[in-house]
Structure formats: C-alpha cells, structure tokens
Image 1 (cartoon, rainbow, N blue to C red):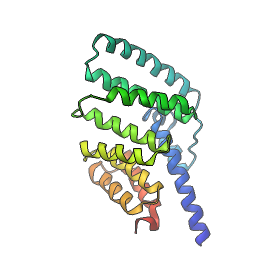
Image 2 (image 1 turned 90 degrees about the vertical axis):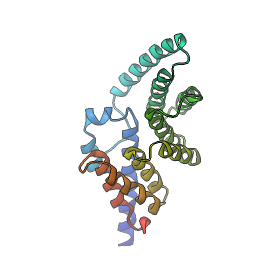
Image 3 (image 1 turned 60 degrees about the vertical axis):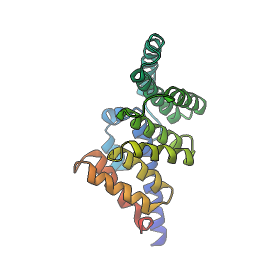
Image 4 (image 1 turned 135 degrees about the horizontal axis):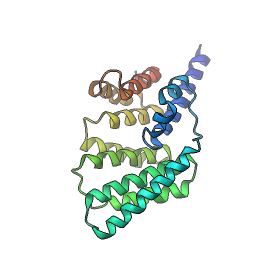
Amino acid sequence: MVAKRKKNKQLYRKILVSSVALLLVAGLVFSAVFGFADYFFSGGVDRNMPAQEEDYLSSLEGFAATLEESLLETPADDDLKLQLSNIYLEMAMVHGSKGATEELDSYALKAETLLQGVSHESPAYAELLLKQALLAAFYQEDDDQAEDYFQSALDLAEDNGEVHLYYGMFLSLRGRGTEAKNHLEQVLELEPEGSYLAELARLSMEGLGNDAE
C-alpha cells in the first residue's frame, strides 16, 4: 500500500510538472491546438513540443523586431516596454522547453532589464511577474527568485486566480502542502466552477494527499 501510494504520488508530480511546462509555452496556444484537457487528464503530457513550436518562435521573433523598432522611436513608452517584455518572456519559455538555457537566460534578462523603471500600476505588470516566477521556478531552478516574483505578483494582484494556481503548484512540488492548499483554495473561490483554472486547482489539491495535513 505504501509503495502504491508513493508510485501514485510520483506519477502525480510527473503529470503536474509536464502540465506546467505545457501551459508555460505559448500560454494556452498549444492547449488550443493539441487539446490540453486530453493531454492533462490522460497523463500523456510530453515535454517534447511539436514542429509548430518553431513556427511560434519565428512569429515571436517577428513581433519582437517590430516592437523594438517602435520602442526606438518612443523609448519612454511603458506600454511598448510591457508588450516587448512579454514577448521576450514567451521566447524564453519556448527556448526553455527545448533545453536551450543560454537563450532562455538571455531573453529573461532582456525582459527584466526592460521592466526596470516601468510603472507597476498596470495589471499587465503582475502577469509579467508571474511569467518571471514561472521561468525562475520551472526552467532556471531558482526557487528563491521564483518565490520573490510570486509574492510580488500577489502583492499587485491578490485576486488573480492564475497567480494563486501556479504558486500553489510551485509550493506543492516542493512539499509545502499546507501553503499550496491555501492558494489552490483561493483559485476555487476566485474562478468560475468548471473553468480550466478551477479544474487544475481541484486536481492539484487531490494530488496533495498528506502533504496538506
């Protein structure tokens, strides 16, 4: 019984890590194309992304080039900085999914540098902090930096269910079940019943087991 419980827990963690990776790359672009629900609930998620990943990366590079040109003309435009930072972080995530750590770190640093001095009042800023947290946690393996980003994102957007969800997953994978449960319960309070965020939170809570006691 103990061995079976351990095996189930290992499977849960494997599915959770793979699911986070799938969600990170291109937001929900891949989930829309390849059926996230089927991948997640069947346990068949794979870190190997299909050929469309390269097409997506090429599109991101084109968007980045356009925004970079616009920013040269209006270097004080915070909205452009936020948009370009978002593109850089997306590119970092795609490279991270491919194991290209040098490119991942390069684009993550570009985004961080660009965000310096940008107003924190925009709701988009909290979303970028979340992406930075996810990059640090799941691709750069820097838990301390990830924790700082998660906390900063929650300070700006404490009612953001997505921030609570990913922070809960982060805590769960690090054996901090009680804290994880608190954030996952927040997702269920904030998000509509049956939404993908609520379903992921519910599934994550089921996998916590004794960790949440």
